[in-house]
Length: 438
Image (tube, rainbow, N blue to C red; front, side, top):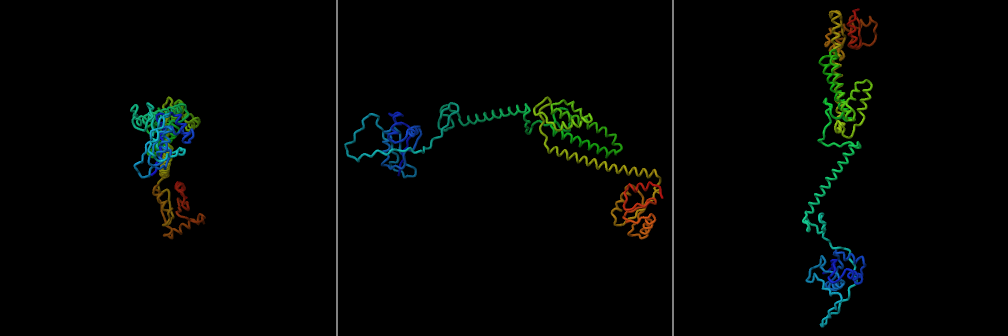
C-alpha cells in the first residue's frame, strides 16, 4: 500500500503568505514561481508512492513550512487502518519545541529530501458566475447569493440577443433594398405579381412577368383567330380580325403600363406601342431594362417569375401557332374545292368534260386520286391496265398519236382529249377540265 501527499493550497493559522513562500523555497527546494502556484488555492499532489513509515515525516516537515497538507491512499492499493494520516499540529512560530519524552525511542527520522511540485492538479469542481450578481460558485441551477435560475436566465438572454441580431440584419437588408443596392428576397406567402390574364392597371411587372404576359396574350390571340377561322371561314374571318387586333392592343397597353410602373415611369408611356417603329424600340426597353429594386409609388417590387413559367408559355404559343396553321390549311382546301365546284357549274353540265383514268389494281397513287375525285365530286371512267389488255392497247395508240415515247406511270389521264401522264397534280387536272375539248 502506498500514499500520496496532497497540498490544499492554504496556509496554516499563525503563518503569513510571505513566510510560507520563503519556507517553500528554502525547505522544499522549489522556485518562487512554483511557490506562488502552490499557494494559488488549488489542490496539488506533492508526492506519490510513499510508504506508511515515511508519511508522518513528510507531513510534519510540510506543516512546519506553514502548508496545510494531508495524506491519502493512492488508487489501486489495499486499504489499511492507517490509510489516512492527519497532519500533526504545527507549533506556533517562536514557541519552544516540546522536549522529547524520557522514554527511550527510535532515533529521529532524517529530514526528507526537497520536494518537486507534481504538475497534475486534482480535478477541480466546475465553477459558474451568476450573470446578475456576478457571484462565483460551483456549477448549480439556482444562485446561492440571489437565487436566480441561472440556466433559464442565460437561455432567455441568448434568445433576446438572437432576436436583436435578426432585427438588425433585417434593418440592414431593408436599407440596402431601399437604396437600390440589393434585390428584395421573397418567401412563401409574400404578395404576388398582378395576374397576366387580368386587365387591372395597378401593380408592377418584372421583366420575366412581362415576357410571360406577352406570350399569354399572343396565345389567346392565336386561339381566337383559330376559332374564328374554323367557325366563319377565311372570308368572314376578315370581319372579326379588327376586333381581335383592338383587344390585343388594349391588353398590350395594360401590360406595358405595369412594366413602366416597375421602371418608375408613368403608365402613359405605354401608349408608345401605338407609334410605328418606336414601338419596337420601346418593347426592347421594357424587355431588357431592370426594374427598381425598392418600393415606389406603384407598390413593392414584384416577386420573380420563374423561367419554368416562361418556357411553358413559349411552348403554349408554339402549340397555338400549329393549331392555327392546320386550321388555315384545312379551310383553304375547302375553299379551293368550293371554287372548283363553282367553276364547273358555270362551265356547263358535267357532260362538258370527259375524264378517263388508266391505273393498276396495285397502285397506291391511283387510290389517292380516286379519293380526291370522290371528295370533289368529279366523274371519271377508270381502266385497269393489268386486267384489261384492250385498255393497254388503247393507251399505247393514243401516246403514239401525240408522239410520246417515254416511260408511263400510273395513274395517267385523258381529259377532254388531252393526255396527262405520270400522276399529274390536281391543279393540272382542274385546268384540263376547264379547257375546251380537242
